[in-house]
Length: 269
View 1 (cartoon, rainbow, N blue to C red):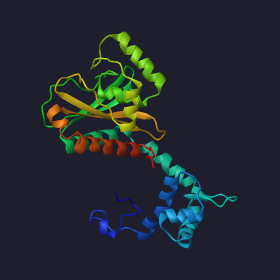
View 2 (spheres, one colour):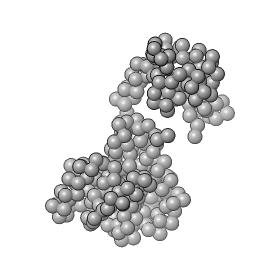
View 3 (cartoon, helix red, strand yellow):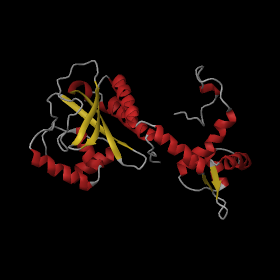
View 4 (cartoon, helix red, strand yellow):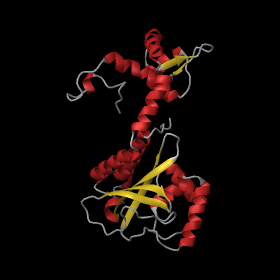
């Protein structure tokens, strides 16, 4: 994957135009500070950015003047400065999570030819807020406003795995009291199943609400590392199951990972 720091003239397209190489080179220092998530000594920072210490120092002098980087007077270590913080805060304020999420859902549906649902945590549990339909005709009852069972659907089970345990227990208990009103039949979910969902990064259900239609759901995280929504791919068994491991699950993982990064979540190193 190319980044602003690694993308050179050879990777530039005509629409991008000509860039400033020195800016792209210096950005590698900022990326190194972001990835390290802590103060760094000059030699370590330079090595992480692939620069000579003298070259890195010249950039850092300018970055200190602009407030992008600060240096601890006692330890000599560098860290991101106030201007970098202001940039991050402004980006968060001007970013519309739902617009980004809907763009992700549309692109994922286009790439996979599957129905894709965007699910958030609502007053009654996992709630569909948008559905991007593929060209195929599916006999399913998923539409905006649909509430999923916490334990009987792929979407619900991924929330059960990644939301705080107290919230999950309350939601499951409320679902048992309500006796209906949700898609999917509630069933017991074990600690082992929860751990497996967390480990593999997605959830599915062996007995889907609609026979012949399968679903996989993956979590999306925000800047605090909390799950804020789920993206669920839905399709006919013979199509979805046939390409799940090779095509559809990698595409779902990539989509939710990229969306999480856009919402400020730092990817695990």
